[in-house]
Structures are given as structure tokens and as C-alpha cells.
Image 1 (spheres, rainbow, N blue to C red):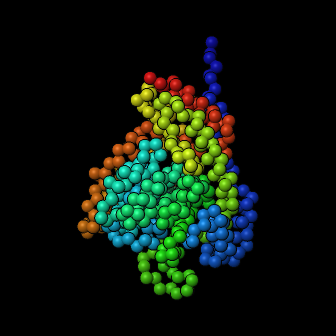
Image 2: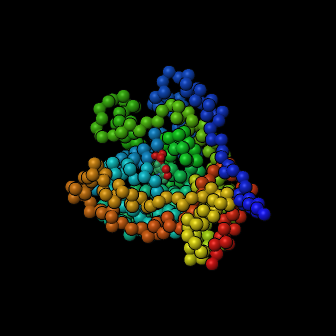
Image 3: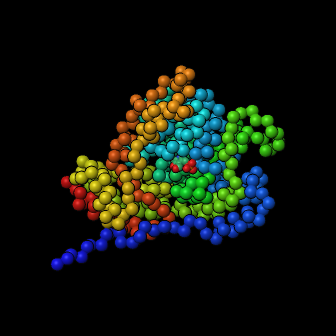
Length: 403
Ligand SMILES: Cc1ncc(COP(=O)(O)O)c(C=O)c1O
């Protein structure tokens, strides 16, 4: 007799939201009737400024072409000198560090906290040298960093804090949105982010001394306000354009509708898998509002039989969309291991401005995190009943793998 296979616990397709709709089409149509799609004083980009500031009331913002561009603009505006150092978490996207490398700065990797996956204040302190100028606080997975501790360290050592909010649209630290607390905030509108126009970004600050640098630096060092064209610094073209601004504006108008369900469902999943032997859900302060860009939990492999990859495979067999997240901390990529930053060279080191050797870097918590974490893609279309099936699947697999 053939046995009927048991259906997976998650017996429905992975929910997908409709991300762009009538509002985006209406604004794009408006843009298509303009005679210019240039950002400067363009009506769509003016709308974007207003829509962004209605949520994130920063004094100066510069919408730009990507999250990578936004972080590059932030570090460039600070005018650090070649060889100066910025402390960054070992677990992040390349976009967090690319601009630093291009500015001939030295990213110094610090370790993460085991249960928030964000920069560890102890590790930041250990990474500070006389050359440290800034901390890049990446709010990974939409969970805020320990900003009280980070701001305190920054005050003690006169460091700038740049907040990388690429994964943290709508995330609050206490009552405040992340991105408004440090010296500069950076956001991404890439295709994977909570809000998206395909590719885009925003950098912003309340610091008056940085205001004009952002706009000039993202626009080839042309001064659009005076109209004078006499670049006095090496800068890039990181401009947004009107069609992208049109889409971003419509997305910002849906900001709360996109981020709030993620918060509710992420909290629900956390409640559903707390107190399960072998499962270590992420940890949040009750007063904060994480917005779950994705959902990552860790396995206590001492409590479980089998490997993380076997656990992931068992979850997938139960219909859960799960994978093992990133292969390596950023410093382990070939680029860093080979110091291959400029055609096989690294001028900063060749000219004696740093002794950094990325082959010697090791952030142990980041390394073990990537060995035992389980990554679940997440979005605002997930319903309570879907989330409950996912948590049942995790509990069931954990039970099956228990020692
Ligand atoms: C934390 C973080 N910073 C920066 C970036 C770079 O953003 P973009 O892809 O828009 O350049 C990303 C994108 O994945 C990110 O997750």
C-alpha cells in the first residue's frame, strides 16, 4: 500500500504583497507629462522631499541613486582624511563600506551582540584608535542598534555617528525613528527594501555644517543654488531622477501600511517561538519598534541534534521559506582578504597610512552567528494565520531535532 504523504505544516504559498499600484502609476504618469526628468527643482523630487520629511523631519536631505550612494555621501560630506577609520559591523551589506573604501578610509570591523545581531558597544570600544572618526550603526533586520550606548561612546571619543537605516524603514528606538538620532541617516529604496523604487536612496542630517556638502557631493560638486560651475572637490553623480522620485513618493505615502504589519507579525512570530528549547529568537527592548526587514533566529546547536543546514532543510520540507542567510562576515570576502581595492593595490596601506591587515581580523560572534542562524524572508502580506503556521513548523522541527 502506498502511503499518502503528510502535507507540510505551512500549506499555503509564501505571501507576496502587491508592491506598486495605482498611486505609483498616477505619479509616474504625471512625471511622463513633464518636459524634464531632472531632479533639481523637479516637481516629483520636491514631492519626495516633502513626503520623506513628513515622516523623517530632517533639516537637510539628499535623495540619491542607492543606499550605497547615501552612505558614500555621508562619509564624503564628513571630509575625513585618507587612512582615518570608521567602525562598522562585521555583518552588513557591502553598500555600508564601499563609499569608505573609495574615500580611502579604513573600515574597522567590530563584532555583533549575539541576540540583536547589531554592533556590540564593547566591541566598538575595543576597536577605537587615535584614527577613529566615526561609527556606522547598521540597524540590521530592522532592529535598532543600542543607540544610547553608541551615542555615549561617540560623545566620549568625539566620533560621528552615521546610521545605516537601509534595512530599517520605520524602525523606532524608543519613540524616535532611527536615522534621526545620529549625525547622519542613510536609507535605501532598493528592490529588497520595505519601500522601493527599484534602486534609490536618501541621506539626511540635522547638522548645518554638513548640509551643503551632501547636495554638492552627490551632484558632481556643481552648485545648483548659485548656478556656479567650479567644482572644488572630487565628487560623484549620485542623483535621483524624476521617475524614481515619483515612485518613492507614492511608497512613502504607504510607509505605515508597509512597516506596521511587519512589526506586528514579527512580534507574533517571536512570541510563537520563545521558550522553545534550541531556538533563540531575536531580542528587542520592549520600548523599541523593530520593523522586520527579514526575520533571523539562531539555533542553540548544543540543544539540538543535526546541523543548522539540516534544520533549514527540515523547515523547507514543512513549507517554510527559510535559508542560511549570508556566507561570511564582510571582512572574509576576497576583496578584503586580498586587499584588492584598487587594481590589486591598497594605496592607503602602500603609503603607510594604515597597518590594517584584514586577514588578521576575526569577530567571533559574527562568525558563529553565520554558522547557526536561520533566515526567513519577511513582508507585509503575511497574515497572523500564516505566521502561526511558520511558528508551529519551527516548534515541530525543533522538537524533532531535540536531544
Ligand atoms: C545595511 C545596508 N546598507 C547599505 C545597503 C546598500 O543599499 P543599496 O543596495 O541601495 O545600494 C544595503 C542594501 O542591501 C543594506 O542592507
